[in-house]
Length: 185
Image 1 (cartoon, one colour):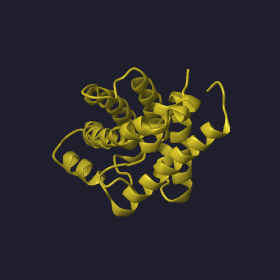
Image 2 (image 1 turned 45 degrees about the horizontal axis):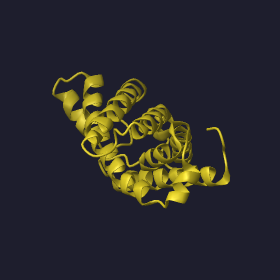
Image 3 (image 1 turned 90 degrees about the vertical axis):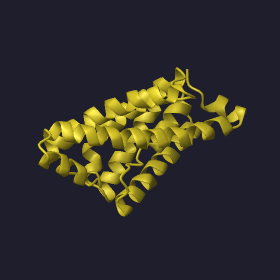
């Protein structure tokens, strides 16, 4: 985050709004995806991990204050997503066939952190529509933390894969002069 300028601040703002709208859509319609990291991944890809982390944290704060208090508790997940997305994008792990591996690493980290928070802070039940599956697995005798992790990982992987699949064409389509203004070192 060496040179902060208006364009970078605006990009973080746009990313945060994309996250908040995605979160609101998933929350309102009980979609079994989070849709809360599209903007984080986009900003991480364009500006680097630091800006991605800020974008994710803004999403957690605004969503938590306005319509989903649970979002505040899951801010650490956004930190991992922002950091890993920026690093893996830069190293080429979010392109082509490597995307499967890159998204796997992001999903493992975010699912682990999210599962620990969900299991120990909320007993496995959150505002996510996937809580029903956690309850079902727990009723079948699966350990609560493992139940939450399984559901969280599957949901995170699909969610992050879709997010990456959406942002890659966007980042490629940006004009070169804009990419140069946004690039991070």
